Image 1 (spheres, rainbow, N blue to C red):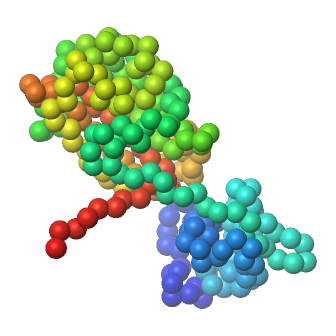
Image 2 (tube, rainbow, N blue to C red):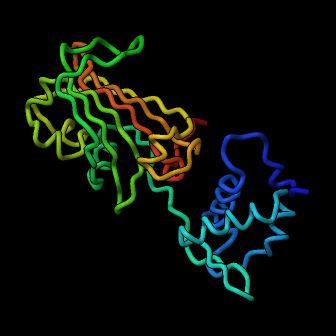
Length: 244
């Protein structure tokens, strides 16, 4: 029987050992299993989580490859690392958003400088005549944390094309004195990693991701920038003040 805290795994396309590895990773991240802690036996973990012994072994092996656990013959399995900190905040101002991207390293996946206008939703403004499309992977300390699809109005791109190709777009855009962002809006939803996102970010297929759609407009309601960002779920936290 699984414990009351962890009900039996339901039907899911995600293999059970990956689901179990995520639960175990959360225990490490929250300090429930601190560094140096000895885990219960495979049989005890299997009984607690309601899974087969082989499933527990697969989850332990995965976390061992990630440097979080160390199985030691005759002694047991010990916590040897700390799970990744959820360092990426969902920012609510342009300046804060710009600061967040300044310490990231973009990897350009592809670029099309003659793409058609992006598909806009009701209330998002109207499109410019031409856009430049870029698809990027952003990394921090060598680890990829997001994939971004960017549509940038061509007249804006032409102001400094080399920088837009080589650097994170938002800090450049915010810093351009000749460009005025009159309206900025973003929407966050929770989704699941598809095969391409899984490959680019190094996460399991169907693992949780945060999807953010950002739209920047000028004073004439023309869309200057549309960004569709997919973040690793284990890098993001949301914090906000609640009005009394």
